[in-house]
Length: 436
Image 1 (cartoon, rainbow, N blue to C red):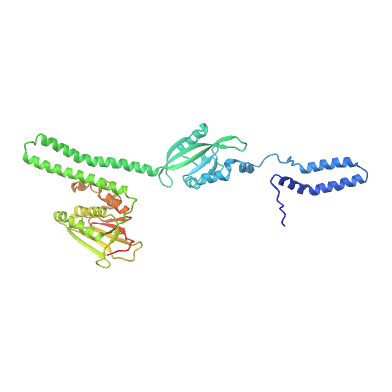
Image 2 (image 1 turned 180 degrees about the vertical axis):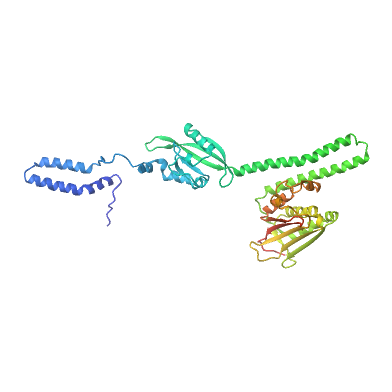
């Protein structure tokens, strides 16, 4: 049967002292016994001396060390505990816990990445050199009230950050309470960009609508006044008004289409669609425009086997709109080349990941290289005058990009001045088994 030799916590210190003092007490008892036997001390005196020696050996005197090590104090401090460190480390945003003097108690990995100069037990002001941060921190320490500050961080990239300093009451080592400062950093860059995009969008949309509205208003005034009884002027003005009204209708239609696509951008289409008949339908619908611009449209569809469908998971109406924009742009802005080639490549088998590529190529004047990165921005035009004369809204390629994003595809643009332009829409192949 095993005997449990472990003592409870309250008994363990006394057992340790007894073990350490055992030799000394035994030696003292033997010496006193000898002295009593030789008659130098009485038994009562010997017992009194032994009691004094035992008390001196067992009482925990600490005359040699009256100070508690700083590391022991910190380990005993509730704020320095592992549980507080775990809470700070688990916060998703950069977080730093400071004492009342501004020294770092705990920080998480995100804060260390944001400000590599931060060190535990050192003043945070030396590591965070932004004037907005230092001012807010000093005010929070002086007043023990919450503070906020927004600043622009230039390293490694420009980022708009918001600092929130919150006083946190914490227990102290001696049972009282104190105030620590919890600093949290929030990245506001994406929100700022969205706000800027929204402001730019509203400004551009209002500008695009203002021009045709002003033209309509002016011609209406003219028809009600000077050209009231002039049939030729009335016919000409009505034709211009019809053109401007059509431009507004196209702009509103594009805006609504873009809004619908953006609202459903996170929902990937799951209906199997064959791209080949969609392209043929769009080409047939644009034949009148091609004849008007004197442009030949050549269609080349390659599948394996030759009559197999080019299936993707897609939204048919959005795909119609995508190819209408791409082919109509080629007919309008590449008309000087005299031909447009529309090809669909669904035959390649060694791709990773497998893709189906629809290519629209014109042989017109091309696009300057500096315009290529911005062509899919809303209302961006490489040639403003030419675009408006062609009836463009500046939203066509932006709509194409958003439709492709929803279909998990991508748009490739290649162009050189005087050598035409090539727009390639890449779609992931459908993973579902095909039924013909």
